[in-house]
Length: 216
Image (cartoon, rainbow, N blue to C red; front, side, top):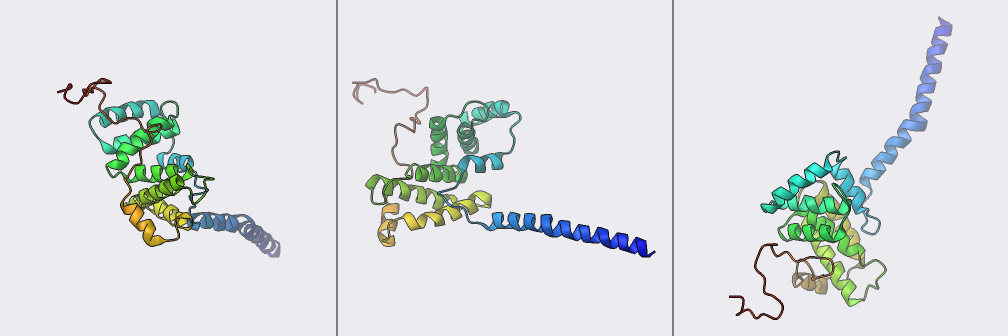
């Protein structure tokens, strides 16, 4: 009987040691990861989107279905096509096409598209001086997009709030002036090299050199 008790006690000690050495540190690490606020400087947009989308076993078929829905004006499908183009799901990654889809969806108020564009615009300004006029404009634009995204619900909204908060230290110190500039800023800044025309492919367009009267 004593030998059996000793054996059980030994097993309990081993279990306790395993719990203390392995399980508790793992749980602590997981909790720390959950509570750590996201920073726009280190935020990996592609990894975040991959976690949200999950494994895409039939990405090609899904993408074709999304394209059909997008032709009918489905904003959710357009936003998801932007994500697919960014990640390379169902084909090769195409940042320019992703920017086109995400811009169209963001203009329609899609929160994930606003989150994506906010991060993209901000990270484009990495290394630019804080006082650089173009950098200030793009940072304010990114901040505005994330503020809009934070008005949604779920993980995207929470992430957008954290990222916007992490941006504030790099915005102009004069908050009143920054707010005024935000109010007067277009939702999507002109960037012809990155954002393709949103004109419908089959819509009539004036040929170069023709006046507006000539096209009537």
